[in-house]
Image (cartoon, rainbow, N blue to C red; front, side, top):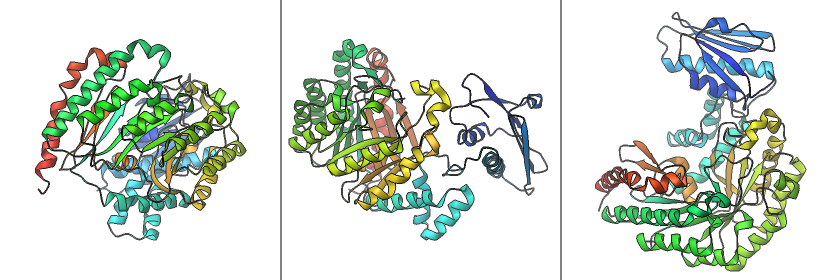
Length: 496
């Protein structure tokens, strides 16, 4: 099938309603294609379509027609088969047909979830051996052995930290959703400084008010703050004084004495100044990120960055000069126009800088990113070769994988992995992936994730856009009662 963002491949579903699962499987092979879902079998008449059927007698049929060439597979389930058995069988048959027809073998197989490491951790806690885990996940999900090993290694490095988690404590996320410019691959709700400058005073005022409200709830419920994370956007897009105002609001409203980790995404090198770094350090943050994504100047231009690779190196050295001893750097495998050699050069040079952690993301083409508009041409790059180089290279230099997540529409169906030297793993990154600790979000587009003692997880989303956040602030704060009740429940089951 030739991917075209203006046309939709018909997906016919007969006898079942597994739309989400079917689409997730199709996206493994056609990550920027669009689909139309229908119950009308008459739609199975064009040159490309997919027909999936679950009959009452337990027969499952999947037919794939691509560019006029049709192939079909069937399976028979027992009479007592459950709904999930039909779902899994449809996806497995569809996966096999698409591997045959496209020649693509997605490395994670049918594992389409965001957190593959959680499945490994669950099995480790059940007492399964490494070999049993590989066998079980490989057989069920058809995942490649090298990916299962990466997930297993990540789980092993996470477990000692998860075993020491304080489930009565919470983490705090502070959102500063502004950037100098919007990168072409970006899907975050971030806003350029040119358009946001007039909103900045009101935004910072509202954010500080929310921090005061959240701080009061934390104090009233006798809740401890475990980690703090400033994200965005690029938090250092604001001025040093604006950053000081926000960080002082955190210091004023929360007890920082027992905080184990305080991180600020300094992010883009073109926003980093010595003054900002000194503010960050003076107000308690010990971990920062300097994120070049690539050191190739031509690629930086293509993705809309206004800094050079040399600027990134200077920003890193400046952070060292100011005294930061825990620096993360972010890279992206698969950026448009970047070659495998160029990525290797970037990774090797970053390793020479000797940061405490390096995160390797894979390009994800989201619908809200401008790259999505150019469709499949963006997915024709050597991302897999880049990732395959990064894993052994980083591990051979003492960087161990400690957290991982996956996203839809990621080039080559790959993953995002954080690597760190021993003792420099980010607690916040692990907690947000494992979903075992409540995270309180403050600011535009921030999300509060409440993990109650019964295991139930609920989310409260702040407004996505600064003007909504500012205009409807009082209405938004009415949702804080749910936060209070959850924190009270958490405290009620903790030993005094």
